Image (tube, rainbow over all chains, first blue to last red; front, side):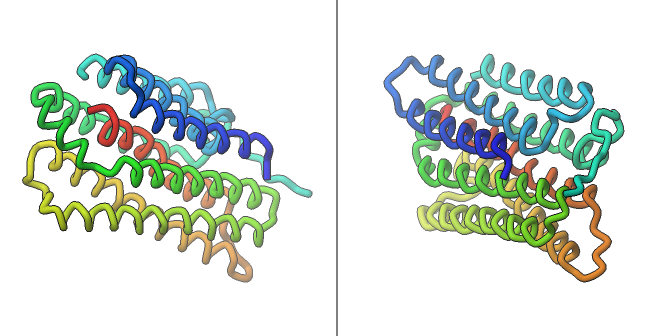
Length: 80
Length: 193
């Protein structure tokens, strides 16, 4: 079992727990939404770059996926 | 120990194959547009969407996230072991991956059962129309992913198997795509309204 995969998995679980905790926290609504979307984006990129090995791919694929995620999250945050 | 090498830096050979990545992008954009539509309607009917969201079981959603992430972790290990030609170990991780997917299906079925018992259907309101359609389409992807996993696992463990690393990576890429969609779907449906 590769150490980088174990570390990524641990980080994903921690981020999931943190997201679950902050969704119930007593913060301003916009701050919570921003944090939830931020942590979800980090998890998305961790799965894509580490588990799917996109880190080894041509930069075209890395930037394209990051761009799609960035645009989607930005549009959702602005509309919310 | 011999490790199989593919030149992933070539634009035509992303891990999983170019066709699989085209599918992944199309799926992400399609689900993404549906999520934008959900948020658009949510901004017009704030109270309705908030009250509807509160009827969803966030704990089930979070546990399902853990199931899919664990499943994805085992899938990544299965690919790694296959590259190192440890077919038996790879097959073991394949089975753990499938277990994660099956646990996801069981919990999702339980969640659907509770919703149907409560009389919540596709036409209850706009929020639940999106809930059933988005989670339903995602569920279909998970089921198809499981079929691909079973198929690939059977193929690679056969004697004189012709399963190549490209096949295993394509199978893994499809499975991870289910993770990616869920990682966006879960916060948007279950948390932000």
